Length: 475
Image 1 (tube, helix red, strand yellow):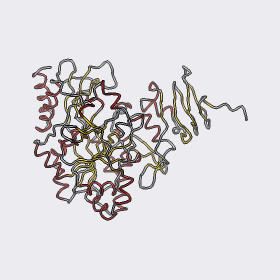
Image 2 (image 1 turned 60 degrees about the vertical axis):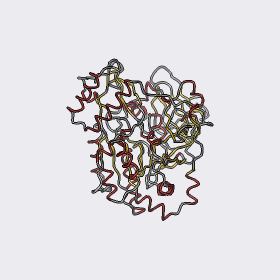
Image 3 (image 1 turned 30 degrees about the vertical axis):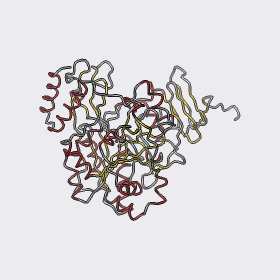
Image 4 (image 1 turned 120 degrees about the vertical axis):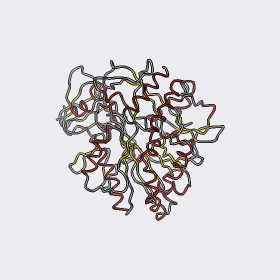
C-alpha cells in the first residue's frame, strides 16, 4: 500500500466523473484501511441492548389518525444496488422472479411497486418511492418502473445513483485493472454510502419542500419491509431522530449484526460480527444475552439527517468494513481485491436520540441465497392483493440445498422446472447431490435426499421424508 495507490484510485475516479464528495469519502475509507482502523467492539465495553418496545404492543395504543398522518409524511427509499452475484445473477437482484401470483411471475421490484401503489390507493397517501441504484442496476430498474402503469410519480425522483469506487488490489493497494470486463474494476460503496448519496443528490431538499418529514430505508430483497402506518406513527410519536427495526434472534440469525450500548457514551452502537473479537464470539452469538438482530429497516428524520450531514460536510464518519473478494466474483482465479464499505445501521451512534423497535418476522423476509428463495417461492406463503407475504407463524423449516447444484440461479431453476416442492409439512429440508424435481412433489418431516453420485429424479407427485422418496409398495 502506498500514497501512489490512493492517488491512482483518486485519478481514476476523477477521470470517470465521480463527485468531490464521493472521492473524499473514498479517501477517508482508504486511509482507514491503510491504518487497519477496523477496531473490535469488546464485550467488556458494552452492555446488551434489551429494553425495546414491541410493535405488537404499539398496535393497541396507537391513534389511527395520528399514524396515518405520519405515513403521509413518509417517503420510501429502497436500496437496489445489488446484483445477487452470490446466486450467479448479472442484473439487478430485484429483477429475480420471487412469487407466482394470479398466473404472473412477480419479481421483487413488482412486489415493491405493488406494495406502494396499493397503499397509496387504500390510504390516500402520496408515499414517494425512490430506488438507490448502482451503475449496474439503474437501466434495468428504470425500464421496469416506467413500464408499470399503476406507478406514477412526477415531482420526486424515482432514482438516485449510489456512488461507485475502484476495487483495490489486496496485495498493493493499487486500483485493479481487468481488461476482460472493465466494469468489474468498480463496485458500489456499501449501503452506508446511502447518506452521502442522499446528500449529493439533493433529494432531501425536494422531500422537505413537499412536507415529507420521515424517510424509511430498506433493502429491495426484503419483501417484509412494506408500508406501515403503525410503524410510521410510532417513530413520529417517539420524537427520535433515528430508529432501527430489530427482530428476535433464532439460531439462524447469530451471524447478523446486533445493537449494544456503549458503556462510556451510553449510545446505541451497531456491532457487526466482523467487529467481534474472537474471545467475545460466544457472548456475541448468545441469543439470550443479545436477543435482537438488525433487520436493516431504518427510519430517520429528514431534518436531523440534513443537520448531521452538514456537521460532517456530507460524509458521515462510519466505521470501515473491508470486504475481500475476487475482481470477478465468478472466477476464483482472478486477482484478490478489497471493497471498502460502511454499514448503514452504524449511523445509529451518531444521533443524540436513537431508538429501536422490535418487529415480528413478517417485516423481515430477506432473500440472500437460493435457500431463502426456495422458501419464498414455496407454499408456506400466500400473497395478498396488497402484496403482503402471509404465513401462519413465519417460523420456516431450515433448508440446505447442495451448493454444487443449487447455488447458481440457472442451475436452481433447471432442477425445479415446475415449481419448488411443497414444504407445508416439512420441519427441515436437506438435498444433497444432483436432484431434479417433477411436478407436485411434497416434503414432510425432516425431509432428506442423499447424494447418489449421479443425476437423480423425483417423479411427479412423490413424497420426500426422512428416508428420502417414500416407497409406494402399498399401492
